[in-house]
Image 1 (cartoon, rainbow, N blue to C red):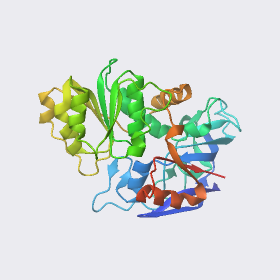
Image 2: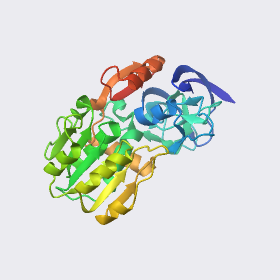
Image 3: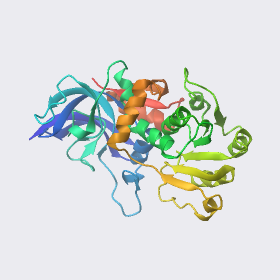
Image 4: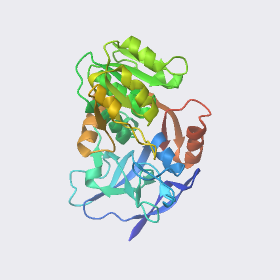
Length: 338
């Protein structure tokens, strides 16, 4: 048995459609959610749209199948419409965050931008009152940024550098600043850098470094002459990571969170000179999602100010044209569902 729904589908490289889809009917242990808002993951979804990935962080290589058609994304909020008898801690009408939902006839049997979203109870989080649910609609991606900023040991006053001014970079920098680090966010986009630090939060020790204007390594060395304790790469650049090694303090930490495709070889000898630790972060875990949700609810992680555009889901193709062409400054993009 199946049910009818709608989804944002990548049908071929660069091709986006909002169209009807068929989803499995919910069964024991599952929840069906009517989606109200879904948040686009510009980086991960974009690389799928260009045919650069075939699964998660797995790069597509010559000879691999094209990952089409596929339902994009992995995060949304909505309203519970149906709950299995064994998931009685939720009820219809509850406002929730959900990860992927099941869908038939696609390269992968699940996706994010699909409604109704039929998924296991363990992949659904009931949202607390008091904050616009849209604030949680990018929670998986927010959790990736939290993972970047929370992984390495940090003491108050330690110097940290976040390479990248995208969403993951923003939340990694916010997390490090919340933990007490002095943070420099390095990026190419002045409009994105203007979001750090968020309004209403402490700006102590926070710096935005615009790379087209200055050599970021020299700027960082001037800001943190004692050396950088934590370096977070969110853009997937081996070359820039290597450039930053001389600015690291002994026993420092490199956090790698970018997508490197097939160009993913970092020489290990140079980091050994300063006895650096390397942390590889990826994906999501339920406990990290729960902690991230709490930080958003408490206002420690800011999400709503990072939304620059909202589109009706029927105009998902236009949203992706904006993201890919950057015809105007763009950062967080949310799709509003009927």
